[in-house]
Image (cartoon, rainbow, N blue to C red; front, side):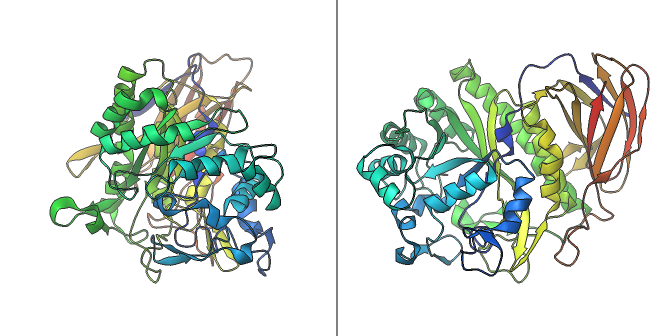
Length: 502
């Protein structure tokens, strides 16, 4: 069947929050140690202990916010272990991944990283092994000015001025690794913790409550929706099985990052498209309790999740990143753009060396992944107005359902430029597409430029020996017709970003 995209360029009022392009850095595997942090005495070039090459790459993405210290790690993290002279910080147990936690990277180092990236900090507080008092003290340490006890402690540790802080999560996955609570238990705990969560500078703190599945989320919205600013959900594109009784501890991952066939390809992309239905259900439910849309939906963990790559330690969550992962990222970002009225923030998991990372490191070496390039290509949508778009295309039968072969979203920048992200999910067949941009105010001849990210094989990825095997290039297979129409052929397994000027 023929494929058609109709974009309504004269409509749209909702801006795509920059914060949909947030990142996540957890103390797992080599995300922090070796990935972001090498220490000031390392031969690897660094700025105050933070890798210079990783910083340089990540700055290209205009990262709006960074979530830390977890994840599940947050629910065992005690902030006082990570402040003060580094030589005096304790070594503690990190139950996630079987590694010891040196605490060399703590609050000061994280805030320095955010400052170097130009990103806002998004901190996840410990509910399951912490207390409201500990959480309040951490917030006072970060945000209080003047001569309070904790402001003075911060000054003695090298930072006189408080840090700016807006985003704060009250717990993480408290239905699982964060305490195995019921929704009633979490709601009661949230009511105890959230009054302690305030910005001591007087600025308003944006409090994010821990969501999960449909029934949990509805009960939480019903009973505590007025006390939160955001509701967190997580969604991974993965294949798992459980042991007897469905115990989460018995979860087994299936599938690998680079060894897969066409059936595996479509299966993971189908899992990525579940995000649209999940968000649609959550919006419908949230509208019943928050008709004005005040509470944001926060997708602060998402991405692909496979078995660790061969040779990597169990629990390191290290995986390579192929053109398939790039398409998962692009499809998911398209979904976020279309739901920008309720989705206020999102954080891909994770930024370095863990799961669907932006960059991978190996000692002094670093590479940008295909997913990195999708985020770089798509940064033109940050802060733009999302435009209504109607896509008609074929669907691929997968498992017990189908997957649309194409994915698209569009936005209008303040400059008037229209940006369109197009994905062809088919790993073998190019796709002809007619794109009708209606309501475009033409002041002269339409001008179109484009870039494409694609590869020769489904399993193509960047390695330290070939770091530019999968990179975006110019794309000129676009024909401009009359009245704001475009005709183009999307290569198989590709992401194309168009810039249209009229």
